[in-house]
Length: 181
Image 1 (cartoon, rainbow, N blue to C red):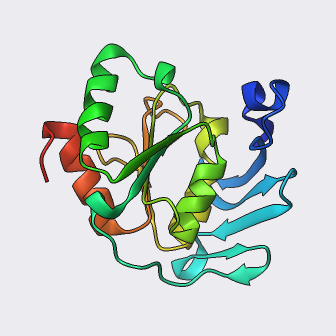
Image 2: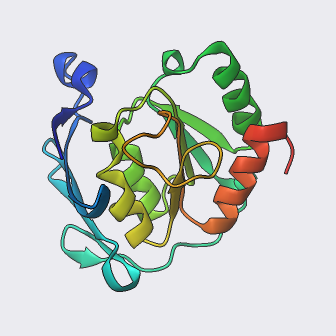
């Protein structure tokens, strides 16, 4: 699966955070993928085979520092990607995080793999938007699901929640559901 220009609005607007995404799918699940950022020459690769692994510019990614939700940066592409109900859920998550950043598109998921961004929450996503993100995030030890906590598939509802650690993901899911951790 290929998304040659993820972040089309960013690309057209001259914002350099657009990416090239690719994923090799086996039986409908991504097993190997990459996030390439041409403007910064940054590249993440991920694999879910044999426990998974991820690299950043060719160097293996190790464990990220353990942070709590209130010590974490939350990222999303744009507020207009959410329905009114989803935006209320997103607001509850945002209220539990240290900071919020919009506009990074798929680049934010690379930053989750690095541990710089703790959580990404998005909606209105298509399979070509998220399939390449799964092996990178999971290969780096993170967790990526839909907003109900289910694995992402080709038939998912378009909501995506990624976190640098399992604990952050669990806390983010709780916040999305009821606003408290």
